[in-house]
Length: 65
Image (tube, rainbow, N blue to C red; front, side, top):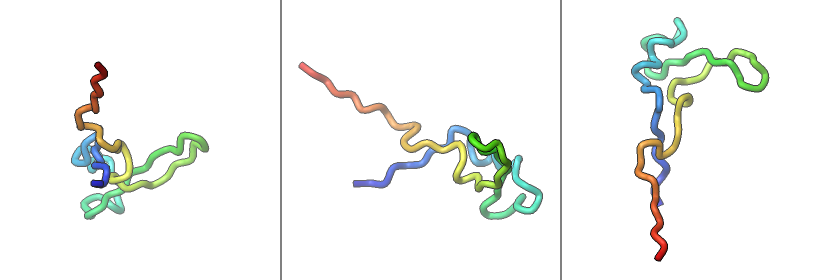
């Protein structure tokens, strides 16, 4: 079975504009986010935010006769 494909609903090239000053221009830039439960700021790689598996795949349709 193949691995689920990760698709960004916010493109990574757009997220790079929000990179922290320390990681701007780096191979794996990071951005600040606020944790949804604690409300505390965190630094996260842009590869790990705004991602959903199989976002752009066609839905599986089952036909019942």
